[in-house]
Structures are given as C-alpha cells and as structure tokens.
Image (tube, rainbow, N blue to C red):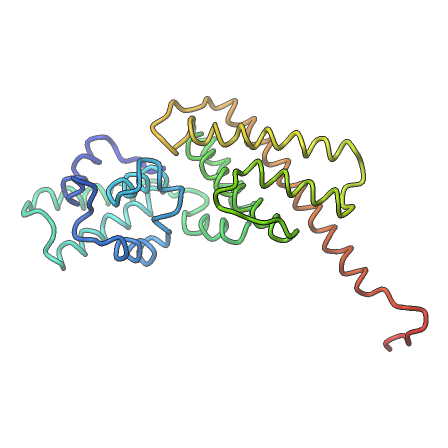
Length: 272
C-alpha cells in the first residue's frame, strides 16, 4: 500500500486526466502493456479491482495495493509517457508537483518484499515470499493489504491443487466449493489417514467462505471498514497453518507416487 496522501492523489488525478474513468490517452490494451513493462504488474488482476474496472479505478486500486517504490516508478513513467505523447495538461507546476510526489515516495523505506517479487511469488505459489509480505503489512498496521494479498494467493493455491487432483476448475466456482471438492478427492484417493484430519479440512470450507466475506467487506476489495489488527493476525495464522499443512501433504503424495512408480515386479530383471 502506497503512502500517497489525499491531496497528492487529487493532484495526480488531474495530472493524468482521470476524470470519466480514463488515464491519459491509454486504451485498455496499451494501459495493460504499460503496467506490465513499467511496473511488472498485471493491472487487470483482481487485486487492483478494489474501486471498479475502469482505467482510472484500476489506477486507484494500484495506488492502494502497490508499495511506494513501484508507485513512484509508475508515476515517473506516466509523466515521461505523457510528455512524449503530448497528452498531459498544459500545467508545468502540476507536472513538477507530480515529479515531487514520485520523489517523495521513492525516498521512503523500501518494503522487505518488492511488489514484482510478490507478483512472481503469487504466480509460482511461493508462500514464503507471500507470507513475508503479509506479515510486513500486518506489522505496519495495514491489515487491508495483508488480507487482500493473502486471499489472492489462497485462491490461486487452491485452484492449482484442485487441477492437480482432477477437479474441474471454473472461475465462477466459489473458493469454498472448490476446496470442498479438493478435500473430497483427497479422501476418495486415500490420502488422508485420520477422520480428524478430514474433519479439520472440512471445517476449513466454512472458514474459506468467511474469508471471502472478509476480503470483500473488510479489505481493499471495496471501500470498506478495515478489520482490526488482532483479528487480521488470527485469520493470517489460521490460513497459514492450512497452507503449510497442504504443502506438506502434497509433497508426501508426490513422494508416494514416485515410490510406486519404482516398484518392480518380482519377475522383472533388476535394472543394473
């Protein structure tokens, strides 16, 4: 989450001509390409959809979700682009103010996990990096950022596991429904040894359903009242425990599958 102030956002909105949902002269395609190359983010990802789907609202979502250094970099690049394409307002003082805002953000302490690294971690399902970023957001009393990022990761994580186990993945299928089908497949394939483990995982179905509500109504996803730090930390710890267990379980399943593939028939010659 950037440290842009209300007044700085107001100036940037005028500088980048964000009235009516637009940003400078970008089309949807060039807007997406610009952010992919300059900030290494997918501006049309759900994480930037907190204020709506227009280009201006995506920009506001980016300011809310990205760190100071990435936002500063994007502001400078937007000004450079606007000057080259002659689509900035004819206001030298406003342009100078935009550059000063970028310089102020760039001078602030950098976070432990940069957003481009976090984005890569999301794609690679690297929970260690994501967890570090979420913890940092909580420590800086930014639970809205932490919960939104954690929800994005969990959604991708569960979809990936479901696909691995042959569960039909539909983008319109709720997270909790997908997880329920995944747990059912684990049980049917004999990967769960105790009834209690199965019960705990089944109880997580309702937890993930509640997590959807927290993400939609108590985080950056919309203009929401933010959940307090202690409850945000409880949610993070619970979800983290679930993810860590599933990672361990999946590694065990993979090892078992490899071991089974190396089981030799007594009548076959030993391969050495």
